[in-house]
Length: 351
Image (cartoon, rainbow, N blue to C red; front, side, top):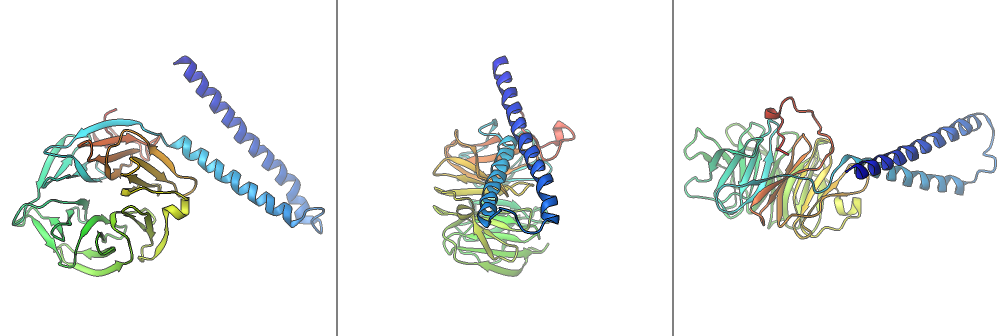
């Protein structure tokens, strides 16, 4: 242990020394160059090729520094807890709430489980209206109600405990709803698997749909998530992860932006800093895509069949591993986004 600690200290010293050397060199260059550029006519012996070369090197150094910062911030394969899901099977979809609770959509079971910050089930929502149904994905509406998709029946349902039956069918415009999420404006986003669409609409307190808009041309959209900047991301089966603006305009894809090759992207989520996390069921890993810098594989081993994922404000990643019939909790960030007030209210899983 002593040797390992000493080695870490030496690595940190080397890195700090390197960064400070870059800082000193750049400051010295600025002190020499700025007065000359401000007062002297012409550019001396400086040619456009020199400027171009400097620009390329500077861009590369800046990107490498961003990568170093990200690699220092995040952690890999730090499994904190395994949560067994009640009933037969595991979980297919997850939704984390800011109060530390976790909604778990059962895999091949007609139920939604509500888990507290310690992974204990505190409530179970049985999925039954006229008959039992199997939920595919779960989220929370802007009014705090549980909403699920049912791809086999082509329905979106919202839980209303004061109604009979308690699951209210929303609209009749769906064919194969798979993923579901809520964007920054409170709209429900529903991924239509077979038709390759995303439907965006508002739902009022009476569970009526307003202002339906669509995104077309997707290939087997599965899961969907919103991002802090108002955009949203959609995973395509055996394809890519597409990014859209709040106006439902395609803004790019993760494979093109980051030069990343997916196997079969499934669950996706976004954290408070705008990092997009993607589960790949074929590669059995979780990759984080930062707003700047290169992708980082934060879970590289120990997964059987990762499907839905969600993350907390405390640096925890929850993974529904339907191949292992459990929810796996990873510490993917060195420091939480917010410091918990107390263990009971933190939303942290036990170490």
